[in-house]
Structure formats: structure tokens, C-alpha cells
Picture 1 (spheres, rainbow, N blue to C red):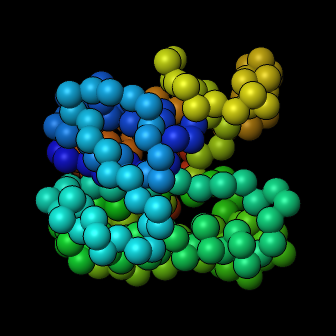
Picture 2: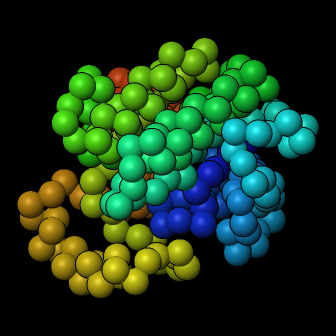
Length: 216
């Protein structure tokens, strides 16, 4: 398969990228990002864009792909709802609308988050906005859309883009995993690849669903 990956300068996207580069089912990877992911590989090309909602100058590079793994995103800490919505809802939706026009047979896999509010009515701002994004993406006419809701993720060896605070928190990963349903990021990425290859039983996948899909 030929795959587009976003968010490769962040921890989740970088982990997904590394699994794609290592996985024999993936023929080539196009990283779409605002800056270089700082990786080099025979399978890898980069498309650097300043605004995911304005892709007109780059459309020729974005056609002919089987899947998009949308891993870009930010923490809501300290953000207003308007600013968080621009990044978490407006940006992925605008990006996806361009991709579905160029690749109507594409499978779109979107990294969301555990406890996302699919009703869009809850009191927690980030969960409500993520739920709005999930629902809007599922209405687009892709071959399939899957929203992954991971919890705690253990990075893949060799990752460069891990924030210092997360590296410190990883020291407690064995303890956190007793109380929260975590999984290695490599397995999340493998589940994403398997969703494209084999399909998935539902459009919104929680950790237990991702574990089952990764084991296929």
C-alpha cells in the first residue's frame, strides 16, 4: 500500500511512520508536515506545507495513495476552544476533504483519543471537539474512515520526537498500565495498517479493539 502520514514530527506520528517504514505491506510513505521529520529511508518522501487547509500548490503530490494515517494534533492545555477547534477540527477536516477528492478509494485513519465525546454535547472541551472531528470525518465519502482512540502509548525504540515530560512519565509506564489501558505505539501503528488491509469491525476503535486488530 501507499500511505500518507501526518504528525511525523510528534511522538504518535513518528511512531506510526517508523512502523510503516519497517512493515513490508507498506510500499511507500509520504510525510505531509510543516517541517522535516528528520528521517531518511528509501520508502520515504516528504511534502512540506505551511497550512493543511490550503493544499492547492501540493495537490499533484497527494494523489495515488491508498491510506492516510492522520496523527497530527496538539494538547488542549492552555488553549481556548476556538484555537483548539481550528487545529483539531478545521485542520483535519480540510485536509481530508482534499484527500477524498484526489483519492476516493482511500482509507482514512484518524488518531483521536480515549474518552472522546462522540455526542458532541459533553462538558469537557477537548473531548467534545474531538468528537465533532470524528463525526465529520466519518461523513466524508472515503472507502472507509476509522477513528482510533488510544490511551497511554509506549514509544517505539529509535524515536526522536518525544517531549521531555513524556520521557519522564515513561518511567512510570508499568504502573500507569495497571490502571489505564495502554499499548505500545508500534501496535497502534500495526492496527492502523491492518485496518487498511483487512478492514475493522467498527469505525470508532477503543484500545481493546486496536489490540485485537494489531494481532491479526
